Structures are given as C-alpha cells and as structure tokens.
Image (cartoon, rainbow, N blue to C red; front, side, top):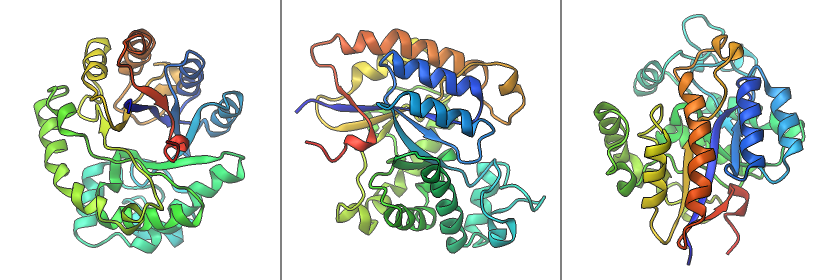
Length: 290
C-alpha cells in the first residue's frame, strides 16, 4: 500500500496574506488541507478562499492560548490570561495553569464547541480538528476536544506526535527536538482515548516536521519528503504565508519564514511527487477511504 500524506497549513484566517498563500498553494497542488482559526482577523477572507478551493480540506485550528475566545468571557474564565479578555499568551503559561489544575475541562469543551460551530455556521464542512501550539498533546485537553468533535460530526483529529524517523532527521534546534521528544511520552495516552480506540475518530500515524517549525526550508523539506516510509499515513504540518504588513499586526513568531515555507512547498512537493515511490496526497476527509 502506498504511503499517504496530508499537506496541512496551520493559521488559516490569521492574515489575508496567509490566506492568499494557502489558496495559491492549493491551486498549485502542493497543499491539500488547512486549519482555520475561528477568531483569526482574516476569518471571512479565509472562508471565501476555502469556497474558491473546494478540493482543499478545511479543519478547525482550535485556539486555547495566544488568541481571543469566541465564547462569552465569563463562561470560560479558567482559560483566560491576566487581562481577563484573551487566552494565556504562551504555551508555557498555559501548561503551568494546566498542571496546577486551573483549567476546567467543561470550559475547554464550551470554547471548542463555539469555535467549531463558527466554522460550520459559515458553511465550512470541517474535516478535522487540531490545536494551536498542539495543546491537545495533553490528555485533559484532548479528552473534551474529542467529545466535542464527535458531537459536531467531525471524524478526524491531528496526531500531535512526531514519529521517530522524522525526529531523527535532526531538524530544528536541539532544544525544540528535546521538547518534542519528551512530549512523545504522552503518545500512548493519546492513543488510549476511547474515540481513537473504537475508530469513531480517525488520525494519522504521526505529524512530521513539528521539530522543524520555523526552519522548514527547501533542503529540510526535501529531506523529510524523501524519508517518508513506503507505508502509513502522515501529516506534514507547515506555516506558509506572506510576510506583509498584516502579519506585522498580529502576534506570531513565524514571520519571514512563512515566505520560506511557501517557496519550499512550491519547489519540493512537485519534485517529490515525480518519484516512483511518491506518497498519495490526501486530506483528513479522505482518511476513511481505502
């Protein structure tokens, strides 16, 4: 069986430049999926781009840190940062609150439902869910998210763990690889969620290039694509865009590198697809197909 690959761009809806890049890459056949931020400043523009590219799978990029909520703030107070208006500003702040028991699972579920329903009410057929900064790595976050996904008829979720063969390519900083590797210890607990055990929710065999986030240039992308095993289903997580004035107005550590990733996808994906052992490109809505 040929390996299958989902090429997914995160941060759909963050800026018009990111949306434009996603539309261009989808038209070029080098992107199959994107995850849309319900509270992204360019949400309406992203919906229009999605409608113009019906072959593009669109998931919900659930934001629980470094963003603003959809729900009334008084109903999700455990998710908010010091200003009482927005989420905690960093993954470290979020993790500290989670470990201290300050984050309520029912509030995670309430906000996730509000974000998913915003996409669905806009006419998006949501193919899957994932999370900003991969917060569903943690069981107490994945649990309510999977329950909400089932309730909203979503049948797929990102596997937030990088497989060992991808991590062994030594992309990204040593500190980032160490963190990704340590968090891999939660992999068995993710797989043990009942929705994944009984098959009501589907996922991949792993997400590649997480450790390369911020350093995914043409050379590293070519290496990742060449290393994909001949069997299995994987997601490549990427962050293409345009480094423009709109991007200057939002909080993100990925700026100039969004141009680098856009160029890398345009150059390296077609080259990889010409190989005799090229993976089959799919999106999350195709996971149930044999």
